[in-house]
Amino acid sequence: MPKISVLIVDDHQIFRQGLRDAMSLDPDIEVVGEASDGEMALQLAGQLAPRVVLMDVNLPGLNGLQVVQRMRKEAPGVRTVILTAYDDEEQMFHAIRGGAHAYFSKEVSPARIIEVVHEVSQGRYVISDKVMDEDQVAPWLLRASEKYGVFPGEPSEESLVPLSPREMEILQYITRGMSNKKIAHQLGISHQTVKNHMTSILRKLNVEDRTQAAIYAIRHGWVRLQDTQSQPDHSLD
Image (cartoon, rainbow, N blue to C red; front, side, top):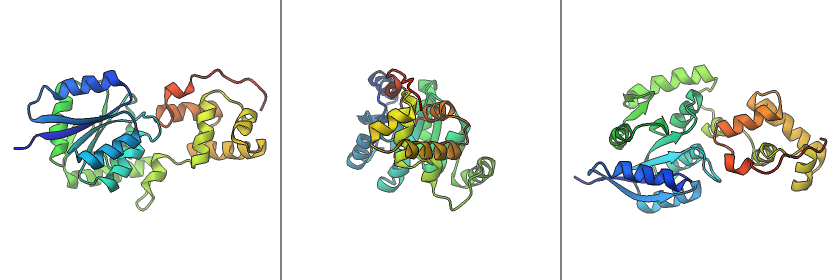
């Protein structure tokens, strides 16, 4: 019987090594590759055709949820297990809706993650630590859709990242503490245009101010904590 091939995707080498060590405990699992960002993950998934991908959410460039959605189209035979530092029920819903087969906190034990790899390799889902088949996932998704106000027919990409590329760019600058004035200068657009984008960002994320928007972006893995470490800018908006 062929081994279960696994691709590990995380931007921290130590965590990747920890997952590799955990997978080595099972003789039926073989780690065939590692990736440190979303684009590399997509490339290796196409080249290596792994059965299972262990995917971090908080990646440089494309976040893990965006990668899952693209992988579903570009490498449809792959089963993805999302691993995250933020154990968020709504994000779990979007991950499963986007194409993932399981969603776990990074605190999951090595023994449990090995069990999950076996389950998803056979096409099953592991949601809230419960194993489900396709027929059981459908009503779960329906209930979760009603809970989070997402309806059938809406594009899943909208749910994963509801902001436009320009809004995401502005949001990243906001997490660095930059004022609207500084952002306008950096992007070569008007101060008023930045304000208009900011209004749209707050509305789409249903938050009250730029600080809440920044926290939301970091919590959902859209912006990496490492990218927010520049000095805050205190000039006037």
